[in-house]
Length: 278
Figure (cartoon, rainbow, N blue to C red):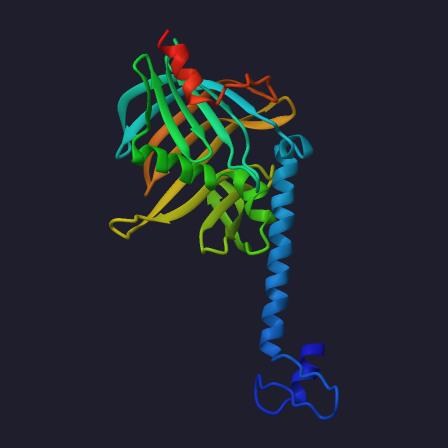
C-alpha cells in the first residue's frame, strides 16, 4: 500500500519525484524500489536455504573441517557407457577458503602406487618413474570442479559481497523435490545447488563454463546419494558425475573420516616422488 500511495503523487508511470525545496531528497522510481525489495527477499531466502543445508551437513563441524579422508572405488564412462576403467582410490584433501584454494592427494590402486597431487594451482602425477605435470585437460577439469564445489560455494563464494543469490523455486532431482539456489559471482560464473526439501541435503551441484577454444558452453553436474553420518558429518557415499548430460564417472565410498592427522609432506610432490622411486 505504501508503494501505491507513493506512486499516486508522481506524474507519469515510474517517473522520479521532483525536489520541492532545499534539502529535499528525490524518491527512487516505484519499480526500482519494488525490484530492490524482491532482490532482498530472494537473497534472504537463499541464505536461509543454504544455512539449512550447512546445518544438515553437520553445522559448525562441517564449517570448521580441517581435512577429509575418503577411501573407495571409482569407474569411468564414455558417452554414458562404462569404459572398464575401475580402480580403488584414497583421497586426502583440505577445504578451500578465501585465503587458500585447498589441496588434495589421491592415491590409486590397492598398492597406492599412482599418486596425483593438487596443490593450489599445480597438478602432478607421481609414479615409479617420478613426477610429471598432469595433462592440461585433467588438471583444468579438477580445478574447475574444486572451484565450483559445495565447499567453495559456502566458504568462498557466499562470503564475497559481489556474489548474487537467486532462488529458482523447486525442481526434481533424483526423484526428490528440491529447493534450487544459484550463486552468481562478480565475474558472471555460476554454481547451482539443488537441496532436498525434507532433509535439506544437497542432491545435485551444477555449474557451467565456456570452452576457451570452441567457445561453446559446457554443463557439469555432480549428483550425491546414499548419505551416511560419519564423525558428525553427512557424507554421500555415491557420487555420479555428468558432462553435458553424459555420465563420465561414478564413485562409491568404502570409508570416510575427518580431521585426520596429516604428514607435513602429504601435499609435496617432490617428497611423494622420492618415496615412489626408492
